[in-house]
Image 1 (cartoon, rainbow, N blue to C red):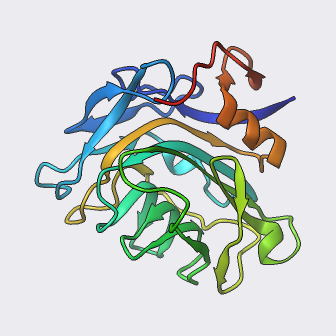
Image 2 (cartoon, rainbow, N blue to C red):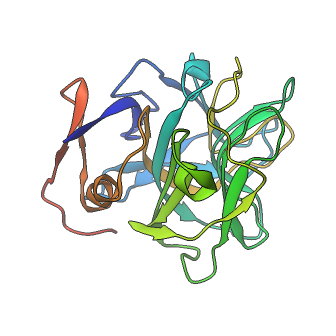
Image 3 (tube, rainbow, N blue to C red):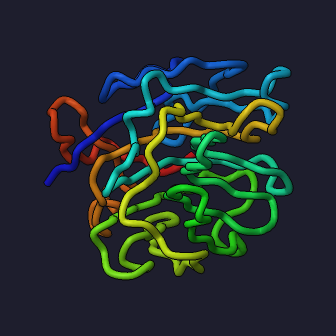
Length: 239
C-alpha cells in the first residue's frame, strides 16, 4: 500500500524536501525536539512575517496542489498560542484569491481550505476538545475532487479520527490554478507566523484513505520508493 508523495519535510535541522524537489527556504526558524524519538521539529516564533516572523517558503511549489483534483496534507503541530492565527501551511494568491491550506484562525476553529477562485470553499470544525496548547496533535486534510458532495470531497482528521466539518459554499472539483508558492508556518508579509512547532509535514497528490491516515499517526512514511511505502519504526510514543 502506497501513495504518491510530492513533498516531505522531516525538519531534521533543515527544511529540505526528502521526498521531492521542493526544498524550503527557512526564515527565522530554529529546531527543537520533535514528535518521534526526539528527532528535531521546526520552531516558529509567532512574529510578524517580514519583520522577523518565522516561515518556510517552498521552492517551485506552485506545482503542488495547483489545479489539483486530489491532495492530502498531513502534519504534526504543537501550538503555543490558540488566540492568534496559526497557518500550518498556506498559499495566499492575492491576484486571483486562490487560498489553500490548513490553519487555526484563533477563533476556536480549525480550517481546511481547497479554494478555487475566491469562492470561499472550505470546511471547519471547533478545536474544543480536539487539542490544546503544549501538546502534539496530528492534523490531516484530504481533498478528493471526484467525491460526491462536500463531505465526499473534503475530509479532515485529528489524531487519526475523522472529524465532522461544517462547509462554507461548495467544495470544488479542483483546486485553483496559481503560481504562488506555498508557505509552512505563515501566510503573507504583515501577517503573524505560526506560534509553536511543526514536524513531519507531508504532501500527497492522492486522497489518502482512513487506514492510510491511521498509519501516518502510528509511524511515518519510508520515502526510499517513488511510491511511498508504509513502515512502522520503533515507535515509542509522542513526546
